[in-house]
Image (cartoon, rainbow, N blue to C red):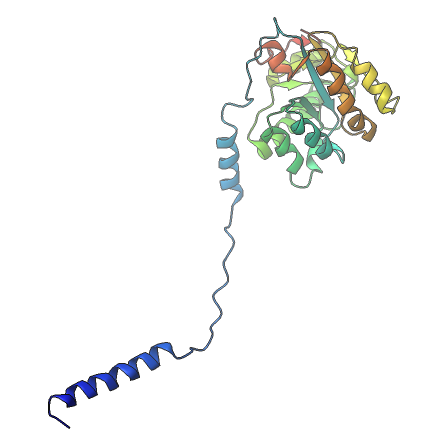
Length: 263
């Protein structure tokens, strides 16, 4: 072998050994499992507050010129509320939900309650346990309102500004407490009686009699009411109505301690 060829042969041998080691199959080692991000209640609360900045998100309708109607749903959230929210979202309709504190508490960590707010609906207070408020002393009225207000705010970051007294049971004592709590009293001008006659066609016909500026009373705890919603939307849309929340109906958040039943 020539002298100059020896270094080349040694270099080739070294390259072969290096390639063999680098490409040799290595023993498989399982990757460390990914740890899910931990979201503390404090972080969740901050996210919710940030998300709801400027709530409720008004779409700025001029209901002095448009044919507006406010659909309102009481007593939930319940087992049919998710289906109702699906229907409203599919038709790009916003409504006002007056929630009962005990129902919010039973709402699997507030899933439906948060969805109501996240999807742009207005949320209102309907007391904690649905009593006739006019028959209660001031301290109990305060507890019925504040306990529900506090729970909804904890879950959604929203402080409610509208309230509907169960059964429409109200008096000066109730209104005075609403004023102290910063809530407007929202009644109604169209009662569908959906709790009494649980027939979708009957409920839809009564809701379809709404006039411009009407506040329509419905209950999302009844399956028959939710089943009536497509017909209600179709009937009123055909008549040229615009569906709004209660606050949008008046063009502003209603004043605390005042009563409203229609525009």
